[in-house]
Length: 369
Ligand SMILES: Cc1ncc(COP(=O)(O)O)c(C=O)c1O
Image 1 (cartoon, rainbow, N blue to C red):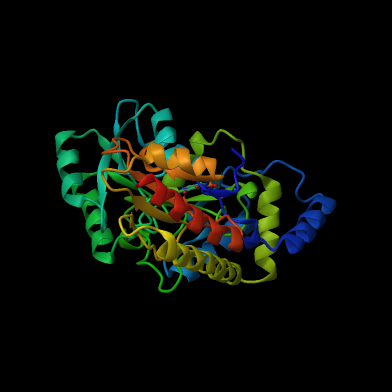
Image 2 (image 1 turned 120 degrees about the vertical axis):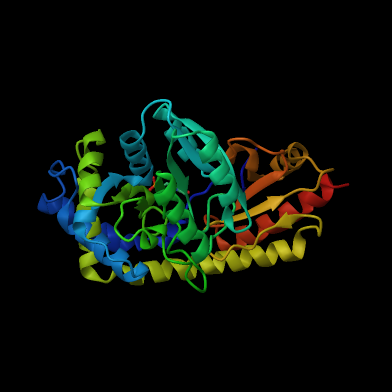
């Protein structure tokens, strides 16, 4: 298949990065020798941490200090470090079902049992969560959640849901691993504050984040946001000596030049445009029988086929037209059926994105015949 319409890959578009400006910064950082050496502190480059702390405090209105942050090689490494620190082999980690597929692989690398709790319209099913925790009497150590613009469903939980989940962590004695990768990528109104805001310094919520979707994924620049005592425990599991000094110097310099909120605001406007193009194309071209969500932020439309249309058939016809989508089943710990797909609209150029919506609609009509 020659892939023309890639709705499968969950990557950002390179349009988000001011490439010329970044290359000037990178060239200057390398020429000065500042970016040459290992990182030094295991916690990470101080000025870059200060920059991220200031950004999180302003953008989310939740106090964050440099001491609350460890820099990591992307959010993925952050997830791995938190899980390895807070669990022992054989412990249970709960994830939203469906969730970010790569996180499940990482959590399993800690030799934990990964158990899925269904996502419902408002987020993780909290009633079911309580039952599962009770059923595993004392073995549940961690709940991994993406509360805003979840990958893959696009769902955002309400403030009340967030408060209840954090309260539950306190009473039932588990930690929450909050993934804020999409938190700042809303199109109109911001989502409720991150779970961290409901924690009030208790340390029940450990938040991981990243610049991958708002600046440049290849920087592999992420963080863990936790109490200083927790961070001192997490760094014992830092296996890369330090995250990239070069990336940290570039980020610090970028933030020195202008408030990072300006960059994120530009990125938001760009994704808002892509979202509008794709939603318009799906509205025009998708059959009425396709169930699909309109997210308020993030990268993904989540779509469900009716009972008599198989994803296998959709994929066969799609591949013949140079189109690909992400099969929803790959995001589940326990797939309920094989009729869901994740459609990422963040990466394609505008006209190709519109074409992808049209071709998908035609493929679906053909599959439904
Ligand atoms: C929910 C979620 N967390 C983390 C990541 C990866 O983050 P990073 O590139 O910082 O490792 C992704 C990327 O797809 C994601 O969707």
